[in-house]
Image (cartoon, rainbow, N blue to C red; front, side, top):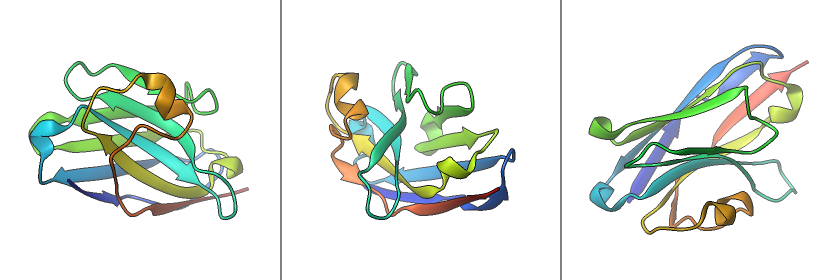
Length: 126
């Protein structure tokens, strides 16, 4: 599975951005897709995930109520709508996919995903 993320950029605090990630290849095997983020020198953190079939969503506490993950199954694309952005949201954002069932707890610890896309930079200025 290949993943292509887009939509990052520079935005002022309080603003919004929408990230997209298009999957290609073995898309029929997708079980879950998610977003993670990483600052240089820090560990990669879970942001949000969505079960591909049911649409059940999971969020990190730090983004709950501000970010919304959604998907377009027909286009094999997952989105991350980010509102009320804060400077601490600045990071490289990565999309990823899990081709098997994994307990959601594994995503919260940064694991569980099988394929990763190249990241897209999100910078929030104060």
